[in-house]
Image (cartoon, rainbow, N blue to C red; front, side):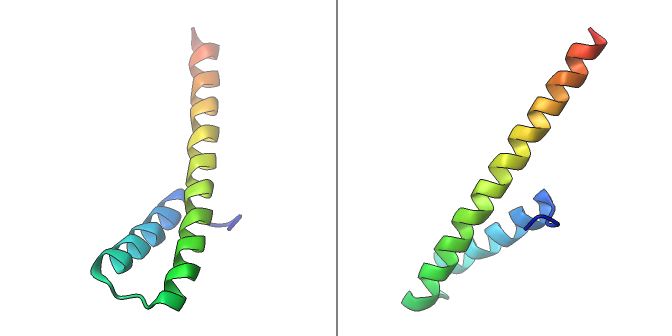
Length: 63
């Protein structure tokens, strides 16, 4: 996941959510997809936190 972008992770997460909502997944696949969704959510959260800190630093530097 290190080379994955936020946009790619978000897109994959949206695909998983859609598959769950439409009932496309059987019980066995559901467990794997929920685990993957959890990983993607963690990845996105980390990216957003890092970006927020970087932006705050930039804003602090220009003030």
